Amino acid sequence: MKIGVIQASSQSDKNELLYNCVAKNVKRHGYEVINFGCFKEEAQKYSYVETSLEVGLLLASKAVDFIVTGCSSGQGMMLACNSLPDVICGYISNPQDAFL
Image 1 (cartoon, one colour):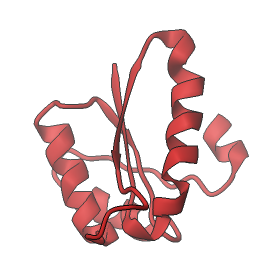
Image 2: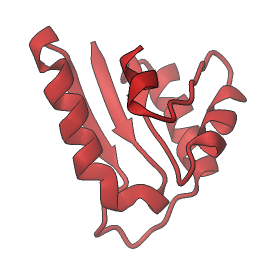
Image 3: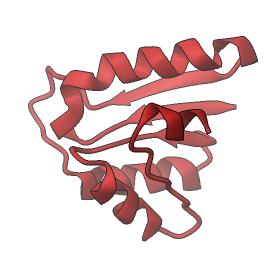
């Protein structure tokens, strides 16, 4: 399984942490994790709407099987992603939700 990590520019400072957490927790399953950004050093800024379009393209093209994403609150990204065809996005607000 290929897992993508991508988030809106408002969360670029958390990109490395998010990527490392995902990679660490799926390593034992042998999954590949790909970091699509957004990165701190990028001059271009992406909103959650723009990032959700990237999520849709990555999933539709089968470049990845699953994506971990987010924005400032997470709710905007969830709504934007759920408006795309064949995309189901959930909102995880705390570690207990993620565990479940």
